[in-house]
Length: 297
Image 1: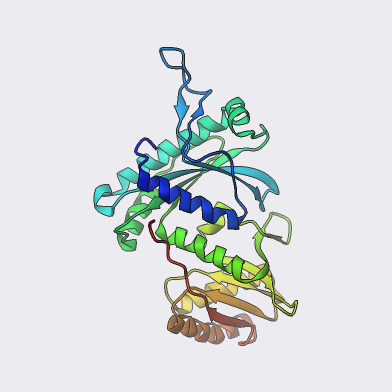
Image 2: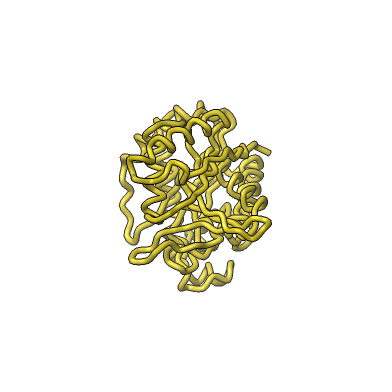
């Protein structure tokens, strides 16, 4: 966060504007320090602080309780990173900030009016990369992900790339376009829980159960699909996800961000593979939904 530039600030502003549609509530101003009760005070007696690019609260559909997420904005080119070591440093620094701020309950209450019972246990690195290269980034992140950052209590760390930021924009456009949009989440020992809030974890999933009402009041149920290709394996995975959510489903819609031709091909694969699951081939209707690409401001 020390490298917080004007471009990174604009990026976090854009990120914050999208999260409102997803049910996140911004807590306090952007790019403002919060005093740390965990770190030792400075030699002059002043408290150490943690730079906070953005802090959000949302009603978690998994726990049905409010949670906090700390967002750290980054804007770096691929060539200036060079490999996984930078990702690991980002993650370690963010994990430390999340832990320390969660332990600074008086400062959170004083500076952001956040009650003690609302946990901060999620950190998101919002990385805007002007020369984005998915293949290189995936390779780096895969090797970085093999390193475990052990924390107690657990801290969820997420690296949001341009793909995820585009996904957030697409979800927000879907919410704008349709009425009464809700998304489904599994809770242990319960059936699907429907919520208008999209938690950080869901943004990193390529399959998001969704429903909305049409102009005639009819309820359409299906899923948003953020895939990269159309294949038999993908078709089977989609059918399995629908069956896991509702074994007796009769009609589902798949709003896919694949290009039109690939979305049509995926529909053909799904119709063919439905027989393997004893599901009518017309049970899943695939429709192309354009993805809204994130652009730097």
